[in-house]
Image 1 (cartoon, rainbow, N blue to C red):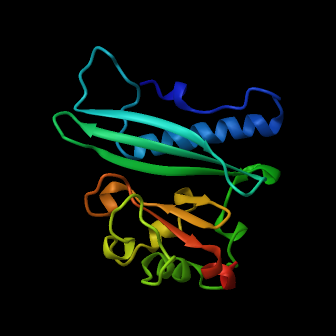
Image 2 (cartoon, rainbow, N blue to C red):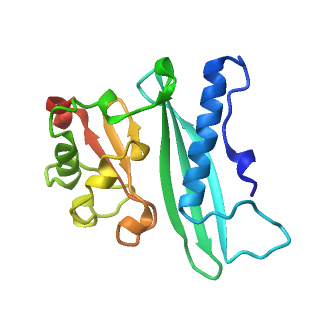
Length: 191
């Protein structure tokens, strides 16, 4: 797999904003790739201990001024029955030509970090929704998830709420990487 062939780019129009987006999405993908041990470049003649597969999808969202690109990295050690899935989201704020920051969504004068983490860990229905048929996240994710839940690279903005991606090594083994959906109604006082 060649990393540069797996990164989305704006081809037309070639504006300064498009060039900035293209440069930043490459940097984001390369950092994500390297942070989980991806080799500098694939060499078809050299056997690797692990297979790395970086994919992306342009995610539709309810915010017209935000481009969300979900990067998924699958890492499979040779001989293993399954691998690990890692997800990061490139959230690009079009009008300001930069990545989303917490202050774009939350009131930074309020304790939004604790509110978001508590909502992920909550027992109330609708507070968090697991992927697939697995257990609820409050039964699988350790308390102290604040560093994960408050990282904008883990957020996917949807009309009904904020989806937060967790990696497979941050939760007990399961068929897919878990995610939490926190409805905006639970976060309204902190927006």
